[in-house]
Length: 107
Image 1 (tube, rainbow, N blue to C red):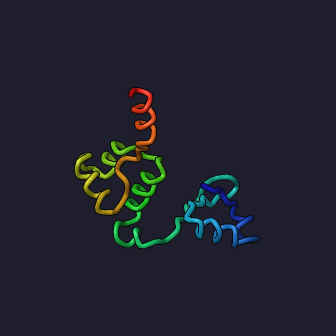
Image 2: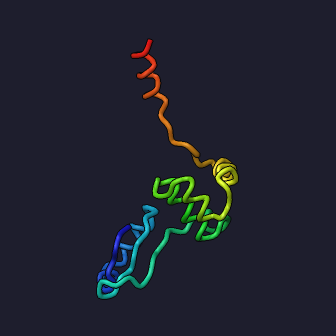
Image 3: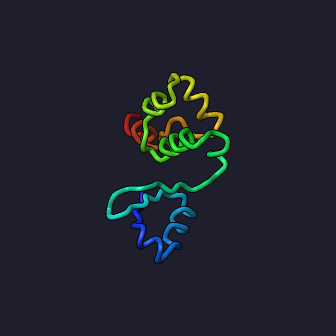
């Protein structure tokens, strides 16, 4: 997340624009104290609502675990996995190549 001072933003608004175009969050500060948060607008915000869109984005970026996401959504892990699959979000990020290497050394 990028932090942008209000004075800096007044002088160069393109800083905020480039951050949002890159789908990054930007914290707006005044005298080093946070006064706002800028979030890139996308279709998920319309369909899911801002809070849920942010939670799913945090999960996709490995900032939340499945359990944390479930707890935040106030639904079971099983229900969360169903929602993730409906949204085409990987439930488990697992690389089978490591297992294949171990299997080759075992055989």
